[in-house]
Length: 343
Image (tube, rainbow, N blue to C red; front, side, top):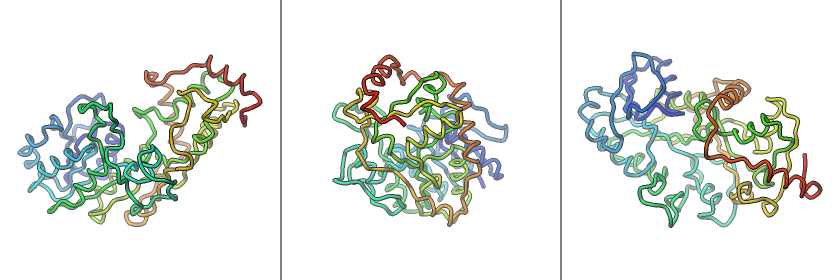
């Protein structure tokens, strides 16, 4: 098929494009051109600004895409402009969404709900009633998160007349080129030969579905390829969901770290180590629908994905947003040597 990808050069998008090419599709990317990744010569490029996507409708029409994959729809305006740009150009749209559309996520971050939602989350689980989950009173209007809401993106695309839409709700994604550096905070302490890693008790118990980026890329490419996916929303996620405590243990075994995991209450921790999520709320998704309907299954073994992630994290530049105060951590370990739970 002729596939036009909006974005496609980022962490997840790049993996999706690789899988689309492996499946034999003809791929064109629409992006700004600010990327360090390389693509095969068969991939065509249209350079432009997503905010001015309507200006490129003639170029899109010349390509005559069978399906458009939008990897970066963040706002309702993104969804609306996408529909306008491809009206009369294509009928099929696939868009990447997030598990943050569920009401349980709203409860987790403290914007709605009175009690934790049951797990796992199916595609028909209740969604948020509160919009703009990251907007606060102090958020400037030009901040990326001011109008961000995947829930509005989904509603706009799924109800659009004349289009057949597929939504993919992604989990926490890890792997090479991850801009969020998932697991880095644990790996760094292990590589720095710290004797212990301190966790909030509530964070240690938290379960959040993760997936390796190669498997997510495969799932998205499969949904693009399968017309059976139209007018559906699918959860994407690994079948097992370890707790944060279990993730630290798994990484420790992988790298041979023999230190302790010390669990303290939030009251015993400084602000930078506290857990801000609601106690008892998890984000575990049921991905059985995409497996049964589209035949999805992981193509990367868990150990291989974790090993590739660790290798990349060790070579990547240290993230400037993460700070480590080992002196403070040593003070905490000394103070709560008997009061904390060391495992």
